[in-house]
Image (cartoon, rainbow, N blue to C red; front, side, top):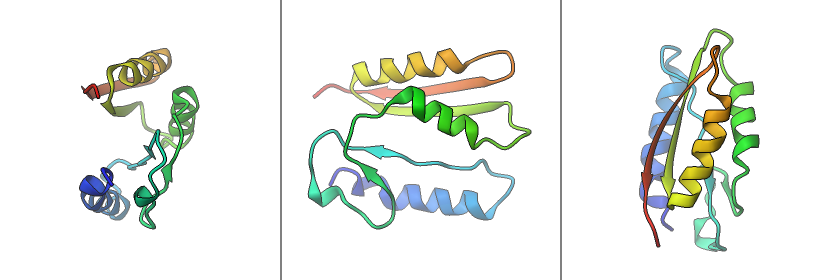
Length: 108
């Protein structure tokens, strides 16, 4: 599947972050919007649904280290999806929480 292209690298970064307290916690969520049985993987949870970005943001904020004051959001996908994640991110961008947003857009 398309996810396999990056999965080993993502798992490596997640493992490094887990072993080194100086690195940020890395939470990886992959959403696949079309059925692809080949995408199932025992290394990471792959969700076959469209993400609810407001719920995702709340979950990430809820798992932040108590001294953290910022989070990084990275999106890669179609422009409409990136825009939805941007909207959810900016609604959480406040005085006490900085949301850094990076993205790559593509169209099918």
